[in-house]
Image (cartoon, rainbow, N blue to C red):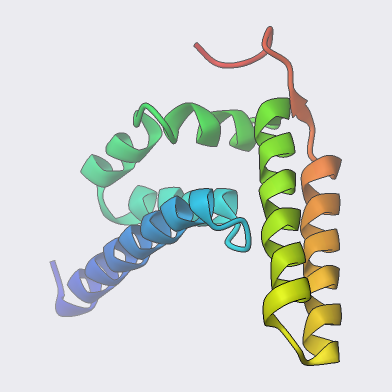
Length: 132
């Protein structure tokens, strides 16, 4: 394996691990979108490490979620509702209690609106079409 390909492999693994970490944080903090980070991780691992890729797509929490999203089946309604609720709770409390700059408040509301629209525009996962 050449130095450049080793560098590429380890760079992709590093990006993949970082993306998984950000995706996990995104489960708790609605401002970070979980799905794009997990999809980025899957793409990086697919090109760099079969072991990490297999771990991610067979993971009890992430595997089915990634597969349903990538196949176009959608996002479960429960996930959509809880994500949007937590998103607006955190954005709302930030706008009301913590952010004083008017344009920052406007940007937070625009971000929350766009994320909500994106989530609502994705297909809703029907339990009959879910994997497993």
